[in-house]
Image 1 (cartoon, helix red, strand yellow):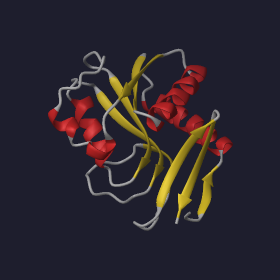
Image 2 (cartoon, one colour):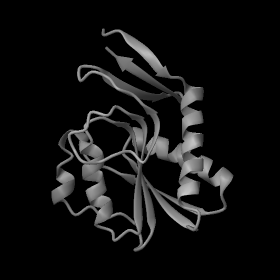
Image 3 (cartoon, rainbow, N blue to C red):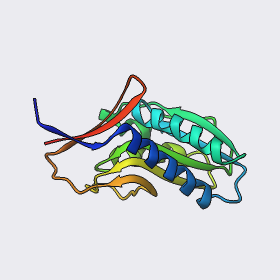
Length: 167
C-alpha cells in the first residue's frame, strides 16, 4: 500500500465548504434562485453539503442536481444528449471533489452550457493545478501543487469527509 498523508480533516473540509458557500452568495448577490450541479458520487456529496450551508446563510432557492457520467470516459458528455432540469437564464454552480487535468470538469461544463444558462461557476474541494484543459476552479477549498505521480483521494465514509495525498 502506498504511503498517504492527510491533507484535510472532516472539520477542515466542512470549513472549506462553509467558506465557499459565502463566496457563492457574494458572487451572486442579485440571484434569487441557483442550480447546484454535483458531478456524480463525491462531487454530488460535496454539492449536498454546499446546499445545506447555502440554505443556512441565504433565503434564496437552491436546486440540487446530480450529473452522472463515466469519469473514465468523460468525453461521452460531448456526444450524448444529457438534459438536466435547468431552466433558461439561471446561474449554475458545478461541483466536483478534485480538479486535476480539468477533463471531467470541462466535459461536465459542456453539458451545462447546452442549457442556455446565465452564468456558470465551478467549485472543487481540491485544485491540483495540473491543467490539460482550459478550465479553472472559480472557488476551491485548497489549491495544491503536487507531482503528476501523486494521487489525491477524497473519501466520504460514515458521514465523515477526509482528503489524503497518496505518494
